[in-house]
Image (cartoon, rainbow, N blue to C red; front, side, top):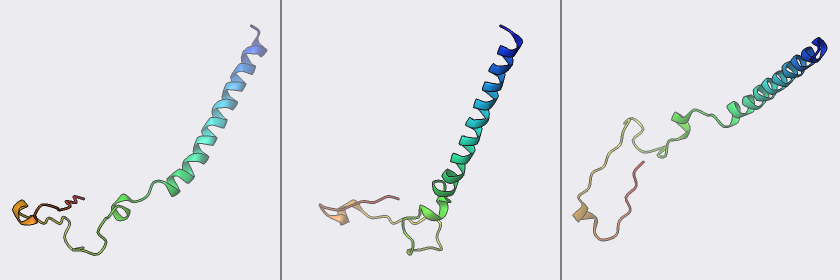
Amino acid sequence: MSLTSNSSIVVEWITAVTIAAGTAAIGYLPYKRFCVTDHCSKSMVSLHIQKDSPKIVHAFDMEDLGDKAVHCCY
């Protein structure tokens, strides 16, 4: 292999790495803007009930609920 052949391979690799890094950066910016959000404020299920309490717990006796009941934990 000659010197010009090796330098052209290096130039091709530098070009490929630069294009890949640029594409990754350009793709990351919209991903960060639209897909990654503040999960603390967006993931709340109950937006109106007991907002002053960090955790809401209600306990019931299973016998008091009867035969059919829906249990929701979030």
